Length: 306
Picture 1 (tube, rainbow, N blue to C red):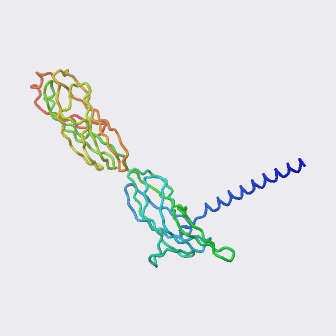
Picture 2 (picture 1 turned 45 degrees about the vertical axis):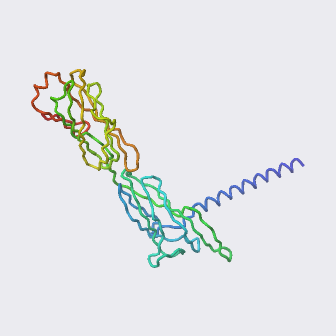
Picture 3 (picture 1 turned 45 degrees about the horizontal axis):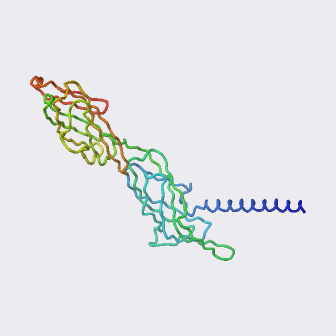
């Protein structure tokens, strides 16, 4: 009896394992069904997705031969990166308008619009075409109906061959009257900002840091709103500055700090530009007769024009 029970338990375990394997195999096969496929001989279609581009894509496709027909309720697409947005997905018959049921053997057009972010990098991305539909297949003498709910229908590949230089905000030129920089006096700094990148910078804010120079801003806001800087664009802001009466004459480092956001709303920066000036002794301002200009073309390269 004990041997018989043991044999029965082993048989039951083997049967459960076989059923589980059969279920998993069935699930895998079903998940791999591609209801749509590109009509070209290779069965593959890659579309181009370049930075900042908007494009209407048309792909000739066929319906899988394993079904009788498919009626779509909705279609949409998902990319594996937020840099690719896809919308207005639809399947159309170029010969008949408003067709909803599609059949194997015919060639249809899968159409959609793309919006590519400025920050996309060189490489490939996967795009899944999904949808809800009713599928009819021929069973044993009768049609079998199956409902699809946001099911994967086919997979496409996008490719990107160019990259844009990322946002880079620099102080292109700093101009001020150096003979006015002495204790107890006020003067104005003219700061020319430039977006040296190839991507638009939104919500730019400038914050000045005068360090231990004894200079203080003569305005109430901490962050100066610059606004949008398009690729290559410059904007100039005039900053009123006071020199404290107890400022110690000498050579000092000051900095301009700029923060911004990209088109996706992601914060970028801060970009820090170090600059230098001299606080004069009160009796030295009369010695200066010219107004020097400090010009910086990049964060690492600058020249002083006398």
